[in-house]
Amino acid sequence: DYFFKDQDGLQDVVSLVTRLLRNEQHKILVVDDSPTYCTYLKVLLQRQHYQVISAFTGEEAVDMLSRSNDISLVLLDYQLPGMSGYDVIRRIRKQFTSAQLPVIGVSGQMDQQIPAQILKCGANDFMYKGFTVEEFYSRINNMMDLLISVRELQDAAYKDFLTGLHNRQYFYPHANTLIKQSDEEHISMGLAMMDIDHFKNVNDTYGHNAGDEALKVVADQLKEHIRSEDLLARLGGEEFCVIFSDMTPDQMRQRLETIRQSIENTDIPLSEQNISVTISMGLCIRQSEDLETLMENADQALYQAKASGRNQLVQ
Ligand code: GH3
Ligand code: MG
Ligand code: MG
Ligand code: MG
Image (cartoon, rainbow, N blue to C red; front, side, top):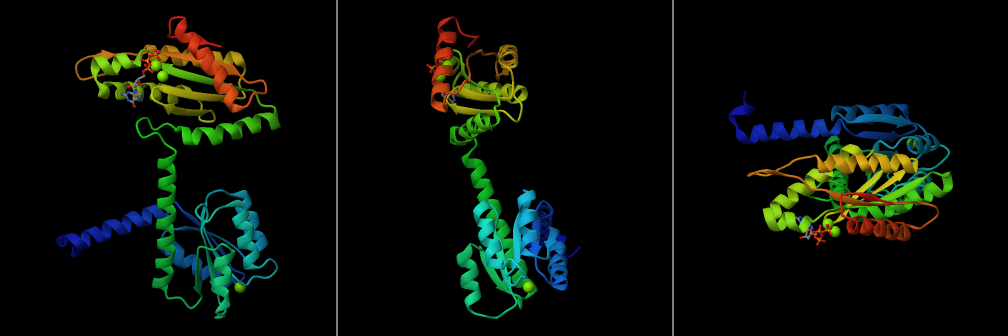
């Protein structure tokens, strides 16, 4: 009752609840050879609604990290039997950057050399075990705020703002990874370039906002008909690209034909009337080409689709 008479108090409650709900999404790995201390840290973290798992040795921690990809933060005791805290951090840094997986080192020994050594090995932060609960929560929460900001920035950097599809910055490195995988595991692969027909007319006739609406509708159709394991991106303007993996050429052609028809048959609602657009597509089935050649070949096929009257797939 006290809170709700006071706007600042209400704001405090809202931000606390928001933080606790956010914390529930994050798993923290506590590594300490003392079961008592492990339990103590676990209780503190659970009070802030974090999910907590624990390991009593460095080996166990490294093993857990190699098997799970849903750990947000590691709290690591520096003095461990067997593998040392330093070695654990070095191992973690081979697999994850400090932005991907923050590590906070903890030491029970008041030795002044330890913090610098732990930080130089790649820990993001450090605290002595004599910390107050307030210091502990502040360091954890600050680290989580930073981690989340970095993730949001990364998401934004790889996403096309208008359509929500991946952008070309995301596309190129991931396309090259798929090509490598396809070679190593002998997985079939095909790349299609897709381009909206006479899109300049849409902008010229109905305005730029209508053009943007059309781009969103086309992107939604692509999302709906392309599997999440395939790589789909807006490369720029009204040009999209998809890489299919582990499908036969027939399946790829069928999938693209379904997309072509669905776009042709989907209304783009404008304030005055509905319109529709069509897209042309060029497909290249990969033999052993590199990414650049694949894209050039698909572009050639797309050019032919345009020259042969548009609204069609050419391979
Ligand atoms: P074609 O059938 O040969 O592909 O003709 P086209 O008119 O689609 O091709 P052209 O490359 O001449 O025009 C592409 C147009 O796309 C020009 C540009 O103004 C428009 N465009 C590019 N990006 C955007 C965008 O983000 N929003 C809108 N509304 N228009 C865009
Ligand atoms: Mg210890
Ligand atoms: Mg076009
Ligand atoms: Mg174009």
